[in-house]
Image (cartoon, rainbow, N blue to C red; front, side):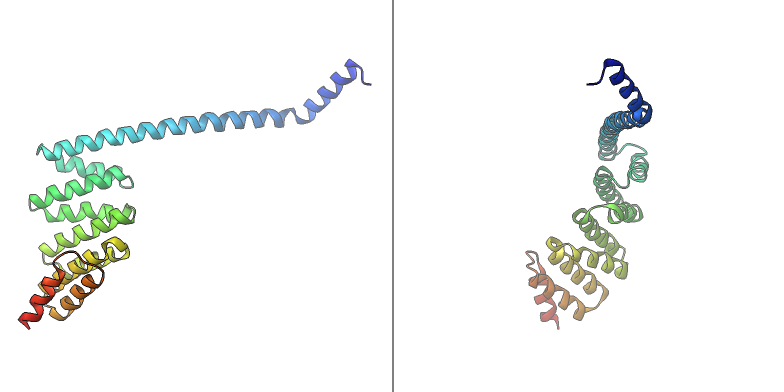
Length: 202
């Protein structure tokens, strides 16, 4: 049986051999723990700040405050990958269209198309296609509408919009096919009426 002195010597020897590693492990462990808490706190603070900025941007747009569109665009640039920015982009695009500023609307919706998750991206595809259609930029509008087809719930709506674009472009054959695709995809809109009107006019 070891004496107390021998036990102490064994502990001293063990600590001499492994002490630095133990201390380093403890330091790293505490660092990770407190680092994660700091990161979590910083993330929550950033989200709260973004929420407040989003609300401010919306209020400015809705109340037609001077510089509101510039403030919204700055918010989009600073937070392009965040959901708040995507929602703000929709509001900015709507506001811009109401003021016949189609270029700003297209730009705002492009932020969503480039950065959002699929469902929001599809909504932005369709809205941008409509803005481009209003500008008679048919080919670009058609490409945006087609992009929305990849998200199943928007397939019928995307096909019907393609029909509208093709019809405006003068391509009745393409429009007929697009409206039929919308009907086949379960369109609840006016696709069948539009298709029948083309057939009647032929």
